[in-house]
Amino acid sequence: MSSQTLAIIKPDSFRNKNTGKIVDRILSAGFEITAMEQQHLSKKRAEAFYDIHSERPFFHDLIVFMTSGPCVPMALRKNDAVSSFRELIGATDPQSARAGTIRKDFAENVQNNAVHGSDSDDNAAKEIAFFFPSLQIRSN
Ligand code: CMP
Image 1 (cartoon, protein in one colour):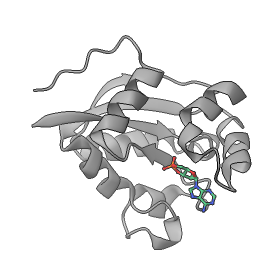
Image 2 (image 1 turned 180 degrees about the vertical axis):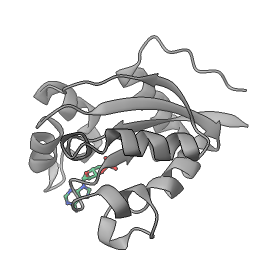
Image 3 (image 1 turned 135 degrees about the horizontal axis):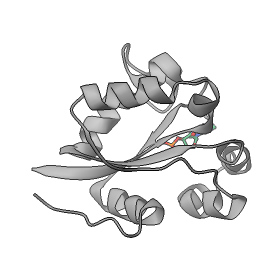
Image 4 (image 1 turned 60 degrees about the vertical axis):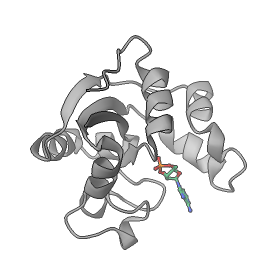
């Protein structure tokens, strides 16, 4: 059954002019883009999005990075979208990511790791609502 996930093309990818190449990988992997918008996150919005990591030692630097330039959040649809997208992007740390994954090919390091992907259906719904509050989520 098709479902949705939230992806973000992060500021490192945007800065390195990899947005188009990453979108091409996503479409070639069979995802439908149901929403997409270039945004430059404020500190407040970035902190709200990554609130779950607020106690982590890397939180401050993560917020500086995510507000350092434009990013491109997208809502994506496919069968098993969350797990399928996480397969496509690879491990959080590009050094551990499988060959051929987006992070292996485009990420700079564990923080500047090219893309974000939701880690569960529940978080995908929350994250899609965060960036695209008026998007209707179909369940078929
Ligand atoms: P993301 O999948 O968007 O979820 C949380 C983000 O925090 C992660 O990608 C990285 O950008 C960042 N992150 C996770 N672990 C570390 C780490 N050990 N050091 C620095 N940044 C990290």
